[in-house]
Amino acid sequence: MVMSTHQDGQTTQTAPWLSAELAANIESDAALRALLAPVHRWLNTLSVRNHSPNTLTAYFAGLNQLALFLRGKRLTWTRCDKRQLAQHISQRLDEDKLALASVQQELSAIRHFYGWLIEEDLARINPTTGYQLKRSPRPLPSIADVDLLTQLLDQQIPDTSEQARLWLRDKAMFELLYSSGLRVGELVALDMADVDLSDLRVRVTGKGNKTRLVPLGAKAAEAITRYLPHRNLWVEQMDSALFISEKLGTRLSTRAVQQRLKVAATRAGIAQNMYPHLLRHCFASHMLSGSGDLRAVQEMLGHSDISTTQIYTHVDFAKLTQVYDRAHPRATHTQNDENPT
Image (cartoon, rainbow, N blue to C red; front, side, top):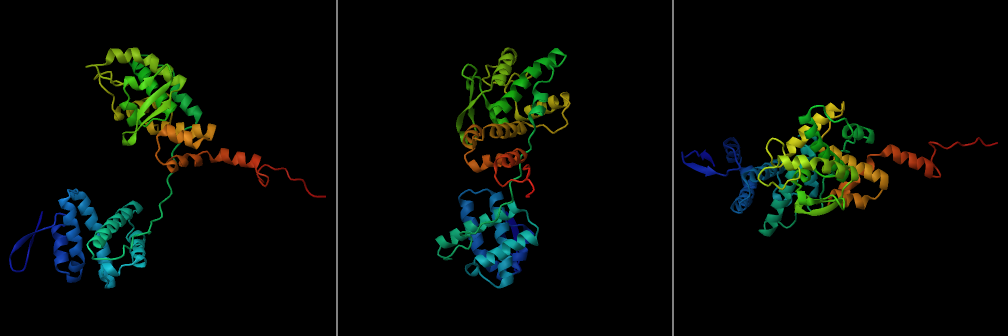
């Protein structure tokens, strides 16, 4: 809680989303103070509903910026239309150089605030209705080719017995990540009962606690089978986890998987940065490249929205160009046009 002192010497408490300096600036600006009065009321309502202080501070910051813009234009909340909103958003992006994600957060605060104003009969129109920011293009995932994955997964077993034991576990993990397209969090959450080595399938619990069944490759099943005797020796306190820390005898952490993958990549002489999610990307890209079945890959990855899976359709563009050159009647890349006589 921030304390502020008035000219009469009285000290009062101000909102927790305000710094002392900002509170003083608002106090000295009558027009801005009037604009922000309903904002404080709204945030107090959210505070009673146990919204986090960080959320309230972020909401206030975004609305304060719009209030400053409206004050400069001598406008009120009810006189802010889509054109004015677009001008403000453009200013935040182009002049203030805010990241798109930050401006989206501010727009969300404005949208919710106007919803409250309408509920309170303080406004009739929400200028954010139908207004959308253009999203920046989703970056394409990095992909390793099949030869590089073969170099990683088929590397020679280490010489020392300790490192050899660890490699049997690590190989099983990496084969499974690439075989079934698992997230690293899904991998370390696997229990023994989740893997069916006879029917070659894995039961995975993904985001939103949703469960899916994913095929298990033969090489992954073989690697897991070779690892299990060591796992059964390491395990402590009847831990149900599939992948166990040799030192602790308990479930392996995601951080440990990341570190072990880097160790394996270095040992295999791979210069490319290797991380667990890269193996998931490779699974998706190679599956799509080989099958073209977007829906099936979506199911195996556990994507709720197919647009997330569609990013992998753009990865293998060179192959797409080759298909186009062979198939399209008007393609010119490989046609041997004869000169007319």
